[in-house]
Image (cartoon, rainbow, N blue to C red; front, top):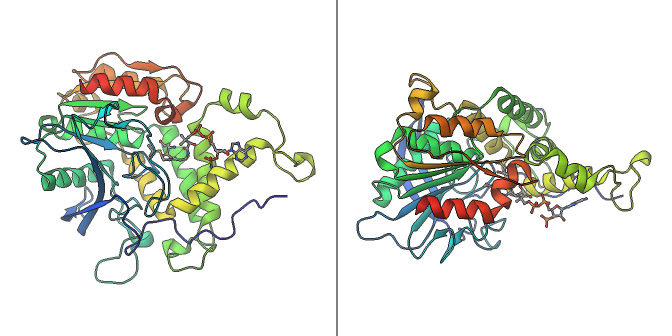
Amino acid sequence: MPPRDDPSPPASGAWREGDDAGHRLFAGVGDVKLESGQVIPDVRVAYETWGELNDDASNAVLVQHALTGDSHVVGDQGPGHPSPGWWAGMVGPGAPVDTDRYFVVAPNVLGGCQGTTGPSSAEPGGRRAWGGRFPRTTVRDQVAVEALLADTLGIDAWAGVVGGSMGGMRAVEWGVTWPDRVRSMVLLATCAAASAEQIGLSAAQIHAIRADAGYHGGDYYDAAPGAGPHVGLGIARRIAHITYRSELELQERFGRRPQDGEDPLGGGRFAVESYLDHHARKLVRRFDANSYIVLSEAMNSHDVGRGRGGTEAALARVSARTVVAGIDSDRLYPLWQQELLARHIPSASDVQVITSPFGHDGFLIETGPVGSLVAAALG
Ligand SMILES: CC(=O)SCCNC(=O)CCNC(=O)[C@H](O)C(C)(C)COP(=O)(O)OP(=O)(O)OC[C@H]1O[C@@H](n2cnc3c(N)ncnc32)[C@H](O)[C@@H]1OP(=O)(O)O
Ligand SMILES: N[C@@H](CCO)C(=O)O
């Protein structure tokens, strides 16, 4: 019987100081005051770019990653990059985000684990990592850091801001917070405010991580290989991954089939269990459990209407030419959420529905139709 859990992953899958930078660039954006009032000193942003910024800095496009993505939008797996680009074919010469025309910027999010300041970064004044003491951050805080990065790069306004899922939350926050700094937006499989179900699912995943004996209140970075909160993070990924795919896809693909060589009635696994084990193992090797918590809490904070007179009033502030798209089989970010965005953003066209069996992950997998929408939106 194959092992259910990999015994030897590093304690955390975070990129750490001294690791190979790969294609990353870094910018120091100074102290950042959070929505909560707390200050994170000396925030560093890891980012990647493609293409050339033109003389008047009018051709910059911001590509926003989702929960477990990073700055590596396209490109190979290799030193410094634990996984290949998460949106293969979407950025490059002649691609939907055409680097012959556009200068593309992809930052790792605040609180992430691939080079931008997050829980695995050193705590101020100390040598240990922030760990579970990393401040609670919101999607607005994430976007505030990106605005500082844009200032650093000399970009007053984005020609386009493109994002799916949590990346779409940041994109819409950009459009609401800085209408004058966003000329077009593509909002994929995302929402104006996290729903009760989204909050509940994230909360269950957070509990799974915190309940892991290897979590140690978030101080596990110096633990031996295999001793991090892998079981908890793996459970969180299994729960999440089910929600990222559709019921029909899982049924057609796996049904009740046993995993090859195993008997579920004799202690073995169903094929779908083995598939989820595989995705759990892969995430544990490339991601940090504390970042998973911090970013899940940030997604739960997402509500463009907070302090702005409600959702409709907030979305009415957007002036960017906006394309909103959803996946018909997405059970995590159902179409009503994209319909709401399209209805209340004055400059949005009708919601574009992508037909796909792949559920929420369709925004990553269906690069044909998604690419056409993105190319058209950028014009
Ligand atoms: C925008 C963002 O930030 S996204 C985040 C970045 N990346 C990720 O999340 C990577 C994690 N993966 C995913 O989320 C999705 O797999 C996607 C969207 C990237 C790709 O989806 P798909 O191409 O449909 O891949 P799928 O979900 O079918 O998984 C294929 C893997 O499952 C494995 N697999 C399939 N069936 C089984 C099984 N019965 N037992 C074990 N493993 C199995 C395959 O061997 C394959 O392994 P590999 O990825 O190591 O090569
Ligand atoms: N598979 C994606 C889905 C979240 O939107 C991720 O891991 O980030």
